[in-house]
Image 1: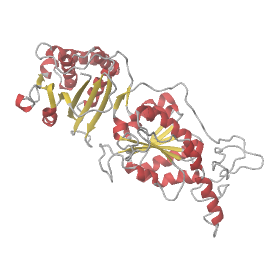
Image 2: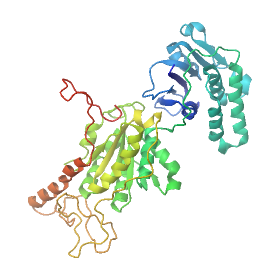
Image 3: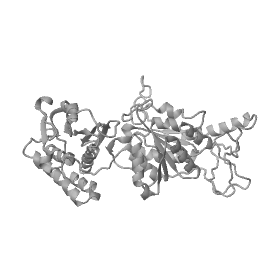
Image 4: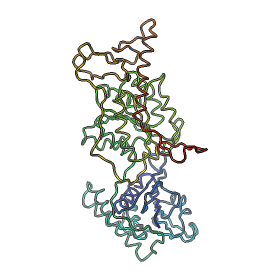
Length: 480
């Protein structure tokens, strides 16, 4: 076989994600291509969680539909998926919790019950013991799992590491000789250790590489893990991370940071972006660079917090009242999550406008092996940033050919201007209190909108596959 699919399921809090990620990482370090997807319910504790891991000797593009091997940490998982295991596969379960019967699964499916308490005396280590049994039956090299156990529990001390290694080894030993080796086996990996990551960490990595030094957000699935990832590396990189009281505050804080020259970003999902809408217009009117990550999920309203969907495109296009330049970048791959985030910061500063990065739960939260990204030559473009205003005076919103005005940061000597969300003239003086000034209004609108023509030249054209004169064209964007 060139591919193999393993599902690890149980209740929230059972360590499903850590067990699944450990297996996925072990395979990625053993020369396999990996694609993993975590399915979970919108509850804190007690809901069902299932990690789908697909490995292969060639590039794997989805988590797949077939199920070769199932690790069921509770009866609920077995009842949900036991009948889906294909012939030649196996179900690994904790026999202390329930007893599986042959008539409950398909023909040719092996039932492998592991008595966790008898083996290790601690139910908290059931996922580790069952993982050991899986590695024995499937015939995968256990050394990578042992390496990961040592890494994962390094901060908890030698006793915890030893206990988990013991549970893993006892799970392998219990399966050896008692159960047949699985007939569904994947070919040998090529030995190359591949990086394994998800879309949100790659967006975060791109933001740090681009020089982002301020991130503000209110937690909202599936953007929350981006907040968690950035917090993890904030101290090492000089990034200031602020968890705000709501999404309105999050974007306003990011705009404030961008106004004073800090590369700033915020992140949310559709419902949170709805709250940000007026502030998007604030960035447009004040011509302040800011990057907004919109990780989509099912809508409308609360919708489907833990399911993927791409239904927010028109919301992003029409965000805020009136017309002003904005850009939406929709990465397709993990590599593009990295490169497009860097591009988003460059475009935001070059054209002094909000730039959105449109991802979705499927891209943001999956785990996938990839061939890496180039971190040696990172382009940084800060646009029309001036440190010495012209002798004839500084106009923050000067009407230029491109529509992009020279941008001086607050505190620059001789560069005094008014920053307000009202319509204004070239100095920033608001015109809303003037009885009527349609000429200035038209001039400033045309100046801002002029940027779009230049912005389009900086964006990549659509990738077209197939004949140019096709009768039917299918359009995909982002993760699809």
